[in-house]
Length: 140
Image (cartoon, rainbow, N blue to C red; front, top):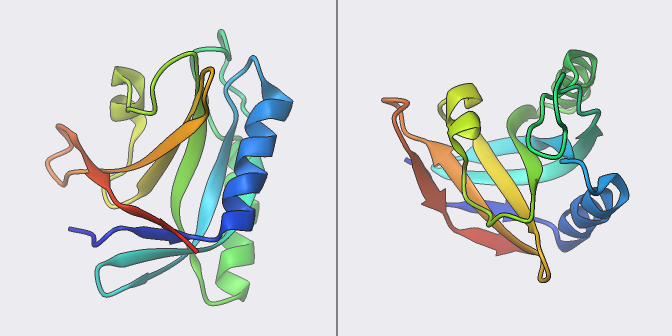
């Protein structure tokens, strides 16, 4: 169980800019930080290449090379990959069935809705892997 997620405003703004840059395809990236007690603190982000082999407007797969690079960067700084982010094109910022199928328990998933008004929500997969639980986001 988590007490929410903290993310810096500049990192959130960078994520939203990346979403706009990759539009109309879904973008993706990694959240690097630490878990303090039950809170996830995002210290930095890493934009990643979406290598989804089908229609990238409706799905994403983080390039494994980007993931490995993020893990190495995090380890050097005493941090870890604590989650991932991706955009939904024309849909709300809620997990899809595809998101549920590929999610890792304990990771936080920041979903950015690219509709007329950009919005974002954070989710954590329950340990039983059957459903997501919404997490509070504190922008600092």
